[in-house]
Amino acid sequence: MYDIIIIGAGPAGLSAGIYALRANKKVLIIEKSFIGGQVALLGDIFNYPAFEQIDGFSLAQKMKQQATKLGAEIVMQEVKSVNLTDKTKIVTTYSQSYESKAVIIATGAYSKPLNLPNEKEFFGKGLSYCATCDGNFFKGKDVAIVGSGTNALNDCSYLANLAKNLYIIFTHDAPNFNAQNVLANVKIFDNTNVKSINGQGVLSEICLESKTDHSEKTLKVDGLFVNLGKKPYTHIFDGVALNEAGYIITDQNMRTNIKNVYAVGDVRNTPLKQIVTACADGAVAVSTFIAEN
Image 1 (spheres, rainbow, N blue to C red):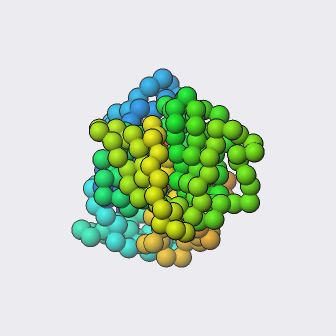
Image 2 (image 1 turned 45 degrees about the horizontal axis):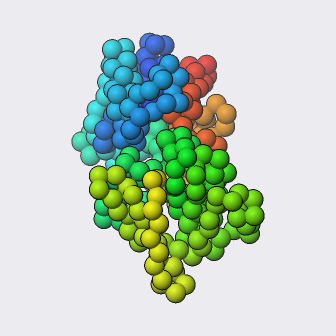
């Protein structure tokens, strides 16, 4: 019997593990793919406190080392099902079942891709899924955003102040605004898809296709930001309340609607999805559990 089972070994899950272990709790962390989650796939990170510059894989490894040094038990297994409603929580993987007093869900969310054949090739080499994470690398350069409605708009004002030229590619009708009247360096394409992304080693151009007349246009860009929304990993958590977008609903103490079940990081209804906020969520969840048990 564990005190806490943490599902997901990204920054939120590892942070929760560190705080729980320092409180002398028996902790199991379950991760299905790789330690660090999506953070481990990032290039250089410049906005995480105490590190002026660090790559995502190295940051994830440092978090793992800290957790394991404290005695964290980490298993690389995929969770098949959970029973969270009883006092004793049961988490079942494809290998075995585990019991605990509490469960912290830290499964994260993934950015919806363009589904282009060479998309992975350009990730971190001009292609990004996070404007606030990587926008600063493209100061004075030509960049594009592709998204659906408000998803693209959320990044517009931030990137427009950094980029030399900004292209906003709406996959559906553009929202009711005209950015060209506000910022001279912004150009809008609506009802348009990104048909292909190209370059030698790094992204250098994108090919657009109009959904209206199927005409094509090629843009020379240094960067492409994809914001088609995210999809959280929540499908196995029966009984946990979700919002309309599928994210787990929590209060400010990371509590879900089920006692001693918490959600942290990108999987919950958080207004900001960053490494530092994910880590804070993990600390809050454990502190809440300790205070109430």
